[in-house]
Image (cartoon, rainbow, N blue to C red; front, side, top):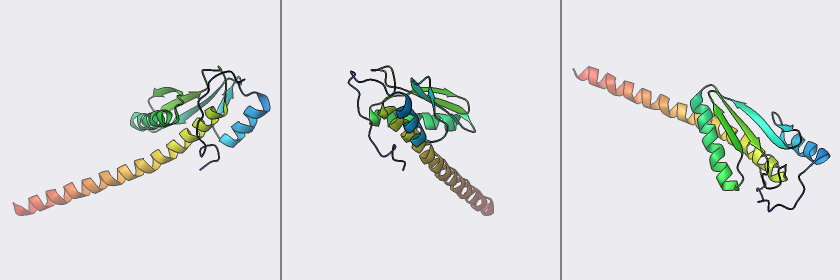
Length: 141
């Protein structure tokens, strides 16, 4: 787990300045690949998927994560992609919580890959069981 992902988002009450310059750069480096700080105002990342279902499942994981953290990104869902845009609306800029949520979203992507593999294995097991059952039925004729 990344250092940022291990932290908890802290609700912003306003009255604090948004992060700027070197602090944004430092946190962006901690965050890792794919994330951009757009005009120093918000974070953005596009995730690619092989189909709509996988993109939707990731969107749902991010939605659950946002509810847990009390920090909600803008989410754009399309066939084969999800774009997350994160900033703190209360101060119209970036806080550390934005970087924390971004790291947790990346972590949710990894959990989804494992869940997809588990689901594929379950589907394969079901297919085998059905095929075996059909074979039993054919033999009884």
